[in-house]
Image (cartoon, rainbow, N blue to C red; front, side, top):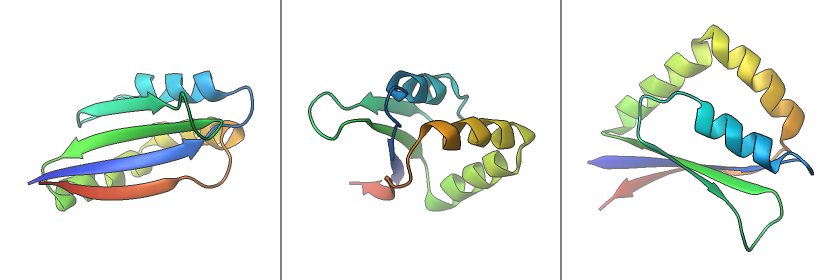
Length: 93
């Protein structure tokens, strides 16, 4: 099974590139893709991470949110992103 966790975000005006850069630079245990919207909602950014199972995905996110690094990351993240977006989990067939 391949699980794709697709998370979309809304960057505050003037911060799209910083949001994209933060996602690209963030180390990941899983293969990752980062998308910046060209046509569509202004400020939209998405990231996809691939995992072998739902359990693997949940464990990876639990480790990340429990890390000291996550607290620093999120402090800046909340300053440059709007509320909203989506957190989707897809099963690749």
